[in-house]
Each structure stands twice: as C-alpha cells, then as structure tokens.
Image (cartoon, rainbow, N blue to C red; front, top):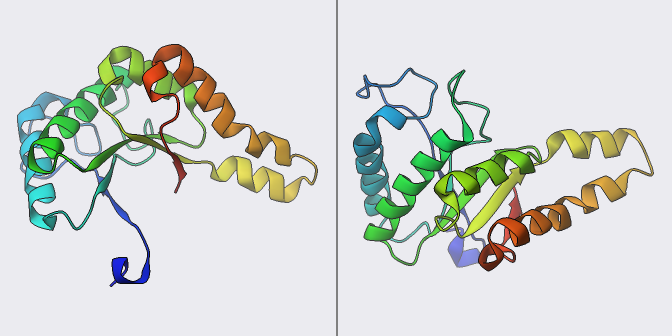
Length: 167
C-alpha cells in the first residue's frame, strides 16, 4: 500500500532472540554471528524485495551491552550486510547511531565497517528539542550532515556522499 502511494520505507534489523544463549539479552549478538546472519537472511528472504532499506540496530550504542564497543557493532553490520546482500543484492544497508554520535560512526568505520553500508541514519532528537526550546540555534541542526560528510571524506572518501536519513 505505501509503495503504491509513493512512500519508501525500510526495516530495522535488531534484537537478540531468545534462542541466542551466547549473548546477554539487550546486547549485540557478537558471540553468535552465525545465528545473527541466519536471522538477517530469513527476514530479508521473507520480505522478498518489498523492503529495500535496512537499518542495522536502533541508535547504537543505545540498546547494546554495557561493555560493547563500536568494533562489536561493526561485526554485526558486516555480518548483516553480507547476509542481506546474498539474498537481495539490490538492498541497501544503513549504519545507525544515536542522536548525532558521529565519533561512534567513525569508530565503526575504522573497526571494519567502512565498505559495509549504503546510507547512514541518525536520530537527532536531543538537538532538535534544543532548537525548539532555544530560538537561534538552528545552525547546530543544519551542521549535522556537513560534519558527518567531513568525517566520511577522511575515513572513506568513497562513502562521503551516501544518503543521510533522519529517522
């Protein structure tokens, strides 16, 4: 229905299912990448091309384990990218970060995620709320994407112009 009316939409690949007894609930499934890959494969296969954009996790480092790192997130991004693209080579994979946590994304890229994403999602609620409450601070919000692109140009010039989506 949505696509018939010109809307594009995506899915979020997240979660540590009950069958994964190798990782704590509420953490990245880094100790069961085989199971995570099987989950991603099954979900992407199930939607049969109806969803083309996949955000990997929701607002990391939120909703990850207490001691988990950007390198841990990079592991699940790489596994999800490879699994999803094996099923649907045309799908797009998105890196995610809470608010405007650009340094976290930089660390994910440095930890191996550099060639395993097609877009980036950010959730800049805190910044937007601050702008609403403090007239004249709009420039902070408007500098999010240029700041992100500057980091990408340094870390991986081939990805400097990937789409940036605020969700």
